Length: 98
Image (cartoon, rainbow, N blue to C red; front, side, top):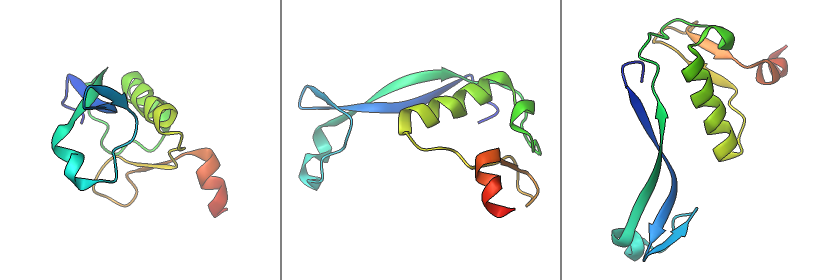
């Protein structure tokens, strides 16, 4: 994601002309679903190997905070590269492993 100028995030759906926040369970309805996107600015800076949330580019931090707000779920870990130690552990999550 480090190379993207914009990041589209699906925040809702249009189903038969009406906006919804959940996809219907009926598979037959999938053909009529249109995603509604909110575009977040990208950061166009490498985050590889970053292990501290505060050292991420500001826009990357804003993107992760946006995902938390929209989903209602807390982000506990963020992978920033292929190595095992290329991981950001958020404090509340990391406290579970002390």
